Image (tube, rainbow, N blue to C red):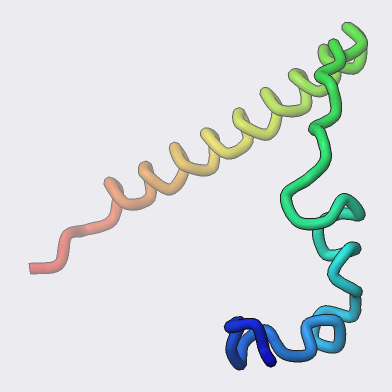
Length: 77
């Protein structure tokens, strides 16, 4: 008997390369607990926020440059 799973469930270990118990992160399907939230180190958080701000500033500069190019281009009529 096939237990009603149908064709899509055949050879899952072959298709994924992992047995069933490993496909769920080692805890099986839907089990396990999320890792507890840890407060980041203030220096690490500061550096991360500075990197994020620099990336956003760079992106904003590129957007403003492109907007200026579009506004300066003659409109096709």
